Image (tube, rainbow, N blue to C red):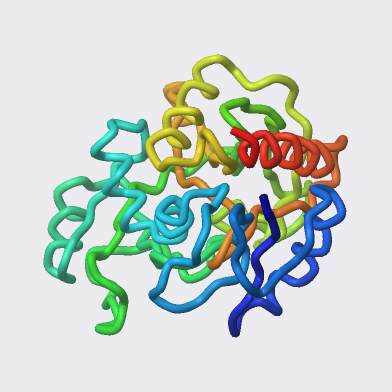
Length: 264
C-alpha cells in the first residue's frame, strides 16, 4: 500500500507550503505522481489521477464553483440566503426590482475570500465576460458583520468560530480573512447551526472526508449556509487561525482519518 500527498502540475507551487505542513502532520511523502491512496493538492489536466483520492475529486471541484454549489444546495434543500442562477442582465434586473428593498450580491463563481463579489443594483451593468450562469444572492446586511465556520473530518464536526472585523478597523461587505476579518472564539456551535453545516457538507460530498462550512445567522435567528471549502486543486482551507489550536486539530484529525481510510 502506497500513499502520498499528490502535488504536481503548473499550480503546485501554490500548495508547496501547505504540502510541507501536511507532510509533517500526516507522515506522508509529497509526490508529483499519484499512488494508491492520495491526498490531492496540486493536479492539472482533464485526466483523473490514478489511485484513490481521500477528498473526492468531484467534491473538490464543486466546492470551487459557486454555480455548482447553488445547484447542489437547492437540490438538497440546504438552508441558504435566497440564491438565483440567471443568464442575463435583464433577468438580474427583474429579480432585484421585484424584491425591493432587498439587497443583492453578484458572486464571482470561482473566487475565494470574497474576491470578485460585488453588490448589485438593477441598473448596474454586468460585464459581458462574467461567467454564466450568474450567481445572484440576497445580501443580508448585519449590524455586526460576521461569518461562522465549522470544520468536518471523517463525519465529525468541530472548531466552531467566527470571522469578524476588529473594532475600529476598516470593513468590507464580505467577511473574509482576505478582506481583513479575524477569527474569534465563540464557544460551542449551536445545535441548529451544526445541523445546517453538516447538511451542507453532506450535500457536497465532503462530510466523510474533509471540508468546512461557512454560515451566517439572519435577523430572524435562522442559520444559513453560504458556501463550503476544502483542500485541493483550486484552493485549500485556511490554517492561519490565531485562536486555540484549531489548525493543529484539523491536521491531527486529518492524519488519523487518512490512515484509517487507507486501511479500510
